[in-house]
Length: 192
Image 1 (cartoon, rainbow, N blue to C red):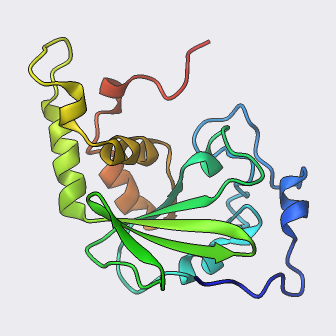
Image 2 (image 1 turned 45 degrees about the vertical axis):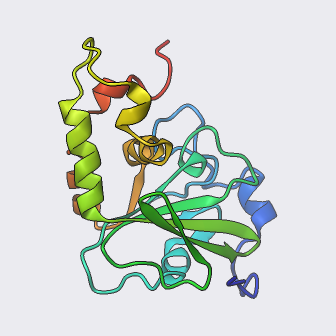
């Protein structure tokens, strides 16, 4: 696994980042409001600059690949030990030293300053197929067993696209999000 050498000059430590740092987001906000998502100008999450996270898998690579953050780190469910989940929508696979197949996607695992960074690579054709299945789903009509429509990994992918925060190619990310009818899945959190 890749292990970063640690804090460089002028970088904040993990303890500074999760202990009430100025870039700590509000827990009452929606997507992108995890405990460690930095302000847009800082382009960081959990005290780690986007550039360093993206470099783990060779991004930016000159392509228009959408790359986004998701998982607990961008929601109010994050904690100081949460890993960073990065999603890549591309036919290009991982370049990291520890990659494995998981259902329809490939996962590449990294460690950066003692924090896990997991990349999930999803092929655009597979993402479109998932979105098309969701579009065809008729609510109130029992034509399929719900557990047979989507795998657990696909259900997680849909949710993570719903709450994701773009790192690269925000327009491409939002175009992919627009393929999904999230209303068919219910609210992201209970209404008050």
